[in-house]
Length: 360
Ligand SMILES: *Cc1c(COP(=O)(O)O)cnc(C)c1O
Image 1 (cartoon, rainbow, N blue to C red):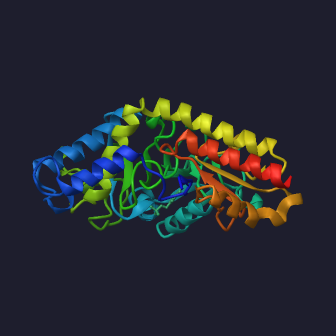
Image 2 (cartoon, protein in one colour):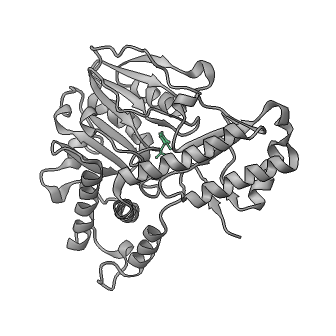
Image 3 (cartoon, helix red, strand yellow):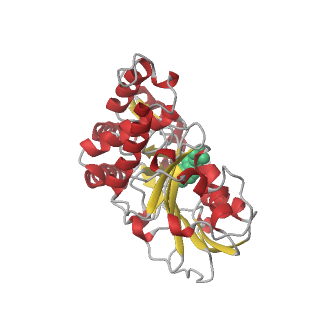
């Protein structure tokens, strides 16, 4: 049976990226040796590193005074690496979900944290608005897409202090004004590759301002290095994950870049939300204006609460994979990242319609 993959992360990747990686694992760059068996100091690999960083710069229009780094440890390592490098006295955070809360917990190890607003009162079903960013904060941290709750900050906000964003689950899904941010980070495994590598886009002038001693690996400047060929090469980079990212970004470019991704993502999300709003058996959980284009969360309408398990089985029998909601929201979550084709969304919508016809 054909499978429609709605996993939240790790998740669906572009088929050509998978195929190219399989080939490279067998024979990298016509060397007769596989990608996982070469030295990361060979010119062939140095070229992949440079091309990957260049693809990031090109696709997101990253200004010259920013560096793009590929680091191990996932987004969760950035939760402490960010405050270690940037928090001298006080940082401000927007608490929009569990990931934001985890980032806040780590930041508190390094200094004062002001939570400027939180949507915890309504189980993070909306993005707080009308808050004030303290001008005495070293930085302001946001989570642009809240993977678990299906809410998203749709615009690049203006911040009077350095803006730091966890973009794990919506990077490359829409055009971005990188110049509004001091630092953007995330795990690759939602929109730009497999697990095993995190991306960090950092404006160089914000670094080196804290007084604490930093372990070498924690200091972003270590990974920037002196020359381009040293970048993200201080220690052995996660070559497999970076290679898949390289191929994934090549695919994004071939599709027409982030503008094309954005257009397609809007079409997919609109189609799915329209069905949720039309179908009397389902109801969306996120505030309408804050609905994520990446993670679509919905539950059974009150009247049909007892049908949840039945719908999951029904959908599974039709090839839907990964639509069970996160335990903190319940119901269903369809993650429709860049590589999720329109066909999958159509199949899910058909499934919801059929279920309504049989049960509604
Ligand atoms: C998945 C996710 C994380 C955690 O990423 P890891 O790479 O597993 O540490 C952090 N933030 C957001 C928004 C996420 O979606």
